[in-house]
Image (cartoon, rainbow over all chains, first blue to last red; front, side, top):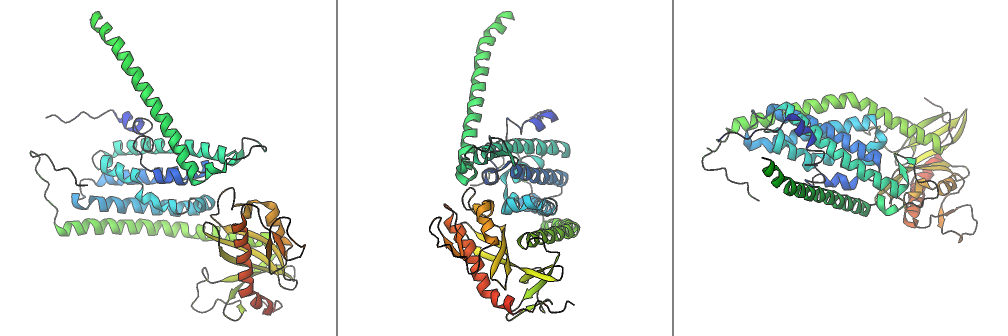
Length: 221
Length: 221
C-alpha cells in the first residue's frame, strides 16, 4: 500500500484557521477560551503565550521524534511543554506584569491545554520540523482569532470598551454578565452556533452546486 | 479508554530498555532545568525591579507622594529597621514610614482580608497622631467585575479613605450619623466594602500599638 499523499505545506498553515480551528471545530482549549476572554488584552496575552509554547514544543518534539522511545513520549512531551510554559510565565511577568497578574493561574494551566499536547501527539511527533511549525502557527492563529473574537464581544458588551478605549459612550449601561463566567459560556455558545450554521450552509451550497454541475459536466463530456 | 490495537500486519515496536527510558527522561529533565534556570536568571532582576516599583508607586499614592520612605520590619513587640534574623526581606512583614523633608508623613501599611471571591490585599496610609487614614489602594483582588471591583474602581468610595478616622465603621448610604469614623459602603458590593474595612481595622488592631510606640525621630542608620 502506498503511503497517503501529504497535503501541500500551505494547507498545514491554513487548516487551523477555519477547517480544523482548535476551539470552534476541535473544541480544545476551552478553559482559557472561557476564563480569560473577559478583555481583548487578556485574550491577546494568552494567545501570545500559547503561540510561544506551541511553536517551541512543536519545534522540539518534531526534532527529537526519532530518539524518544514510545513508552515515555507523553511524559517527554509534557516535560517539554511545561518547560516552555514556565519560560513564558517568567517572560510575561517580567515584561507585562499587569497582564500577568490578570491572567493569574491560567498561564500555568497552558501545561494542560489540550491544543498543545494534542498537536504534539497528533502532528509534531509524526511530521517534519517545517510542517510542524506551520501547523503550530496555523493552530495558534485559529486560537488567537477565536480568543480575540470572544474577548471583543465580551469586553464591548460587558464594559463598553475595546482594549480599554470607550467605544459605546458614557451613556452605555454595561452588560456586566458578559465579563462574568456566564458571559463566557453565552458568547462561546453563540459563536459555536453561528460557526456551525455557516459551515452547514456552505456544505449545503456545495452539495447543490455539485448536483447541478454534475449532469451538465457529463453531458458536455 | 484503551488505545486501538495495531493492525495484525504491523509488527509491534519493541519496548526500549529501562536504561534508555531513564536516560531519555533524565536528559530532557536536565535540559528543561537548564533552560528554566537560564531564563530565571535573566528575568528575575526585572521581576524584582517591577515589584519594587509597584510598591513604591503604591506607597506614594497612599501617603500623597512623600519625598522618601523607610522600611520598618514588624516583629512581635516593635518595629525595627533591621531585618529580623532568619527572615527574608521579600516575605517579612513590613510597614513604610514616609517623609516629606524632615517631617514624617505617616505609615503605609499592607493589609489582607477575605473578600467575596478571594483574598483582598491592599495598602493604606495612616497618621498615628490623629488616627486618620491618608489613603487606600487595592493591590490584589478578584472581586466580581462590575460589583465587588468597585472597591478600587469607585472613586467616591476610595476617596473616603483619605479622611476617615480609625477604627472604621461601615454604614449604608443615607444611614450614617456623620461621625468621622463612618465610611459609606458601596450599594451592591457590601461584602467587598466590609471586607476592606475589616482588613484595615484588624491590621490596625494588631500593628497599631507598634506604630504608636515607634519613635519616628529615631536616628537613621
